[in-house]
Image (cartoon, rainbow, N blue to C red; front, side, top):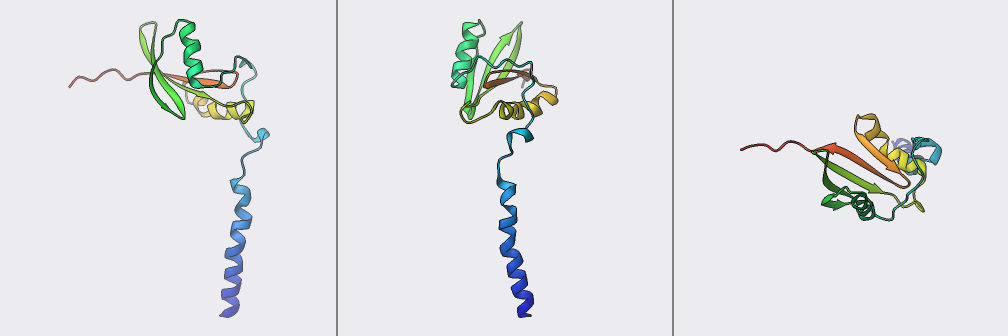
Length: 131
């Protein structure tokens, strides 16, 4: 019985050591790369800087939420659109990490605009419901 207990304890102690690799960040070559036709510039420091650039380009974006990224609403050709804006620090995130961040959105039929170190997921807002 003591041998079984000792073997079981040894196995349980070895599990955290073998699981260490599971907590490593994926290497750059394991990520979904940014498509080659996505421009490398401009780069912005914050999502607010992207909103300011949109406004300079004539697209007013009414900020709704700031949490990790930024959500804002705008009207384009009469349709109201909600934009989820993310900006990644190029000193901490590679181009492949930006590509990996948007991969699921691109493959799910969402409209994604990307360049440099930022991307926007644009989606139509739900029509208002009447009580």
